Amino acid sequence: ACIGLLLGDASIEKGRKNVHRLKFEWGEKHIAYAMSVFHALELYCLTKPRLQTRTNIHGKSVSSYCFKTVSVQAFNVLGQMFLEDQSKKNLNLDILSEHIGPV
Image (cartoon, rainbow, N blue to C red; front, side, top):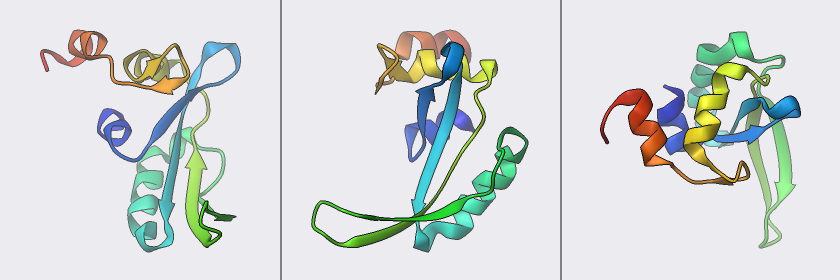
């Protein structure tokens, strides 16, 4: 499920001690989906999704729901699959195929 989320809306980041966590953010109209993803990963989260409001590059106020998981060593393999130089999201097909089979 996490691989599918990372192929879509989620992102991954390296936290302290080179341990990874997942980040999620959806617009207000997708709150039901955001909550279903949160409930699936709730054991890995310290807080519930929160509403945040920011100003986009066009000066418009945009609201979204966001949450993060805690940093967990189990997510490190996802970091290897999806992060280039541990900073930019980029799917590494070689590592992905090692874990789930040929792609």
